[in-house]
Image (cartoon, rainbow, N blue to C red; front, side, top):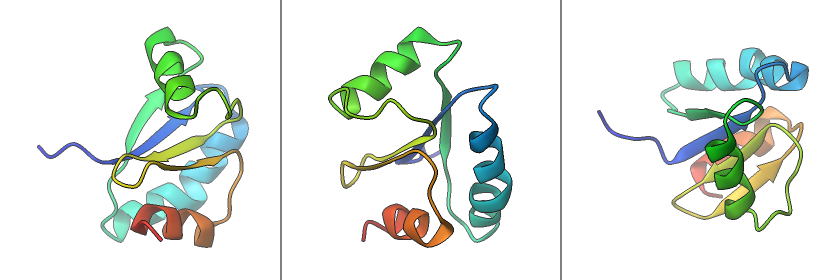
Length: 89
């Protein structure tokens, strides 16, 4: 299985994370995008990884990180911004 380069850092109890998952991420997966989800509120290793990737600049969820471009998005985003990020634009 190929590991996705599109990382979603989220919190299990994060309402906006669940809303974005239903409205943006799951529909994008149906279009062929693949995401790797990493929970941070109950997993310290994932939280440290999120902080390292953004040099501590993003403390909002969800945090999206593209490992191919090193670009990231922090907090609530619209679908067009997420698609551009995912495509590396």
